[in-house]
Image (cartoon, rainbow, N blue to C red; front, top):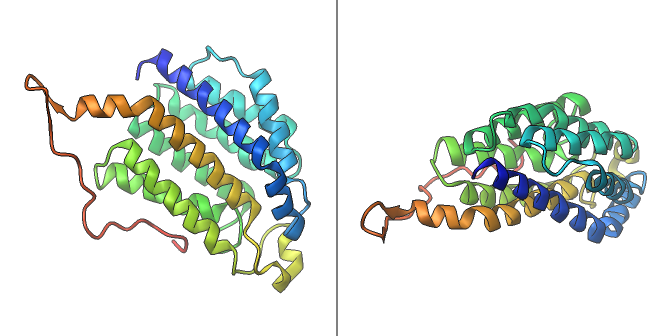
Length: 244
């Protein structure tokens, strides 16, 4: 994608994420009511609505993502602002030369490391890290080891995040307000892991809209207009479910 298309894709992604959070804010608040402050859905909704109003749509990819992050930091209360927004702003520099498969892996890794650094959480603590970690590891492996196209890699990452959310339900929280409940936190999916899955699903859906045609074209043999063999997933792929 050229820079202009990247700007359009980022703008579409922000709108899709903001719309999804608006539709899911009640559900996220219900999840957070069981084991937290009952404000996760409302907080994220306020943050993404602010991003829609504040971010310059013609900014370069790194500035656009940093703008979204700063809007979240300014409007999302509690720990979620720094975790979601501060980590986005930190990782945005990976897009300084544009969005490619390689820079998207670097962005995902930088985002994950900042989330873990700010929150002090690891896999198994019943936090957003339980969905984010397997998603990032799966995406990186799909791109760098299995040489899959970005859409297939994103689809696998979303599947891994979905399993990560399921992983949080039967475990006891050991971080954040949910940890105060002890064993009473068991039986509830983590709201941060759930909202992370929603964000990834929207990123995947917008990527399909913008990349599907490019991938179809790149799969054709130059000069013959015949489609080459598609990349089939290799046997034995570790899709990195929660627990890594």
